[in-house]
Image (cartoon, rainbow, N blue to C red; front, side):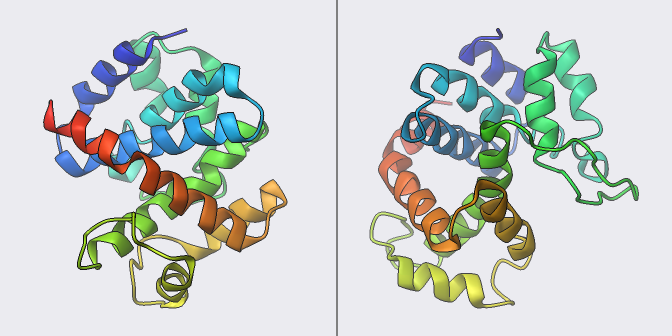
Length: 197
């Protein structure tokens, strides 16, 4: 399996934007936490790598998101199971070139990525609106208010987040609260890694 360091170098080959790198690290942290929480602790690194690489093609090829990824990942020596995981987060979503991604999330890891991907973006946007600019003092009530506001972070699909919760068999509140909590718990670690880039 590709190592975490190799994965990060591969990500940085195609992603230079500070926001995209920070977002990748956030999704990695969320995935590792969920792996441990759901009883897949031995696979936490693997879950994290899928999270880290999930948007590898988005910065350079936004119109071919999840379509260009397999090529970039194979060139980087990434195995087919990780490629499937990466591409499954776009399941049922039509990208810019009019293609609908048909790689279905099957493994629980893939379902978590599908559910958490859009949500981490929404929670991150909500944090930036707070005086603290942080998730650490965020409460579920205020997150739900932002979630229900159609005009807020309109690019983060509530329909996809809802589908993700359904695929996992979870109440939406559980997904919101757990994801918010892990983002708060890992915020400083990610800030530290970003400062070292």
